[in-house]
Image 1 (cartoon, rainbow, N blue to C red):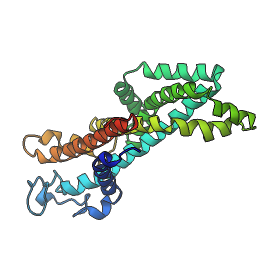
Image 2: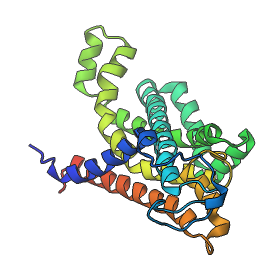
Image 3: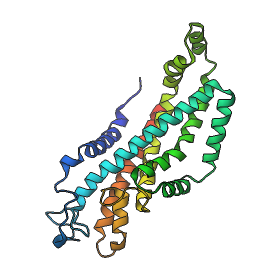
Length: 267
């Protein structure tokens, strides 16, 4: 029986971040969008723990609300990419034939491009905005999961329990969803856990370049973009969301590493 205790600290930390993101609106000490020009660029103090930005908005409140935008959007995007990519890969691996050839050659085309450069080009062509940035990352992100799931399906396609399901009269769709997908879910989930940090950085990176969330939306990458000109005069404006990105990415990367070790039987 496997010992789950090593995972608890990492699951707790990730759960705390997700909790903050879900209930961000109730955890903010101030209205993250309320402007107070008289208190603009106030350094960290007893009232504004992380200071204020150029419009007098509380930085801590915006970082908390920004977690909802950045983290929730990243998790939803990753779930979409992993689900769609895994379904495509499983279908290709199980059916084979022309469907497999066409979809895998299409995935090869996407994999031939540097991921972030392609995402920047796609987001720019779509016109920017958080939704378009997510769409750009989804376009370039699904082939990875398609390749992984296809390889896993090819390894189990000739297993006896699948032959038994066919002999019992199960349709290909039923076999795919009842027997194939559940048996490849573990490695796909571990891969997704390792990719959370990457998706967060890519989504924040697009916002930092002005191709993601648009003002006045509180989003960590956009907040860093708005504060980059004040790095020397008011460093807290850019350091606060940057630190939030660092902590979140590090937490989910460590969780992904532990999940990979756990599933492979290591301690």
